[in-house]
Amino acid sequence: MTAGEGSTRSLWMDTGEIAERPALEEDSHADVCVVGAGIAGLTTAYRLVRAGCSVIVLDDGSIGGGETGRTTAHLTDALDDRFFTLEKLHGEDGSRLAAESHARAIDEIESIVRIEGIDCEFERLNGYLFVPPGEDVRVLERELAAAHRAGLADVRISRGALLGRYPLGPCLVFPRQAQFHPLKYLRAIAQAIEHRGGRICTMTHAIEIEDGTPARVETKAGPVVTAGAVVVATNTPVNDRVAIHTKQAAYRTYVIAVPVPAESIAPALYWDTGDPYHYIRLARGVGGDVLIVGGEDHKTGQAPDDERACFASLEAWIASRLPEAGQVAYRWSGQIMEPVDGLAFIGRNPGNDNVYIATGDSGNGMTHGTIAGMLLGDLLLKRENPWSSLYDAGRKPLRAAKEFLKENVNVAAQYADLLKGGELASIDELPRGTGAVIRRGAHKIAAYRDSHGSLHELSAVCPHLGCVVNWNAVESSWDCPCHGSRFAPDGTVLNGPANRGLDPVSA
Image (cartoon, rainbow, N blue to C red; front, side, top):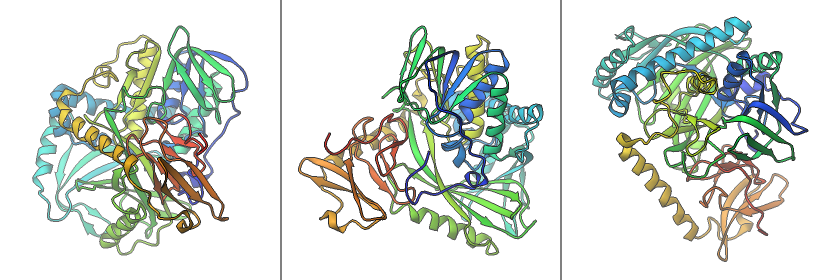
């Protein structure tokens, strides 16, 4: 997928690893049809073809061209939502299963790298969880105790860790974490799937996904896939309107990559406990060492100011700690789906018999996506899996009722935009290369003026559930503040849950 004129591009996307395949051209049948060629979709397909199943993978973009291509590729069992929180929400057994599944996901990636001989810069390293200056370090003691109860007995406290020459202060050390190049990995997985008889069709948009025996996927170009089961692995489900979307919220997260002197930063994963939080890792390549710094999250379509300010905050944050860092070489943003109870939704889609979903990465997309492949593979092959109840897509997050209410009150408040005036007094005020929502009578219009000065007008109402979109100046996209759907300047859908573009003004 692309995000229109002026869009950002991740470090991984600039290495020539994005791969495309021919689009689906004829009706087809398979044991399983997977919609989405990111890490969750391809890991599922890989597990199934190795078990002898016939599999067709469809994606409306390129392999890894969605959110997998925008990850910072931390492979970790140190979960963003903290183990003491997961223990409160899912009990001690649930917290232990969460830790076990993420650790096993890292092992699974390492195993696939070894079996397939993948050169994707996979390496094991330590992870460090630290507290920002002036904040209470006792949170580390709580997390250490909870991590030990979750079975991570090797986690320990360190008081001398450094980020370059910057002292982290007291921190938790999580051993045997990992990192890799996500698109090199996915490209090799795709080749392994095809080598074993699986089919991958990119530039193929699934417009209808229907449960049944067989299940059915209708594509925009016309061909239909029938299958014993369908797996929807599209970051957020595009096959239902409400069932999952009230239980998770979309957030934008921001990333910069800055060159640093060779060997000045110890290879490791670093995370802080701040709000907004930050996450850091080192990438080493032909051009030298590059530090990848992320954070400054906010709800999609609800930037506190201009999205560009999030990049400025990241630059200031790392400059204050590592003044030797160079000028920003890459900057990009990505979409995180935050489930209200901290864990992904993986399994049979609520109300369906033969449609399965994988969503709710919760900032740990590479391991949650791998867990999805492992778990869905077992479910589809009728095998027992100890994680199935924990990640059940139909679960009711009763212990997270407060977070559930907060997120859905926030969504409800966004509908007030339907009654407000426009952002500009006159369309003539709209500069080139930017967009704004204007009011014309009873209608809200998403107006975009391209770099040539031509004006493009669309309905500003998201086709998912009717919220008014906002202009994202970083990605040059229209973002829905309710459930995170995103659209290119011409209205083409970029992210679900909407599965079609913004309507022309004439509609």
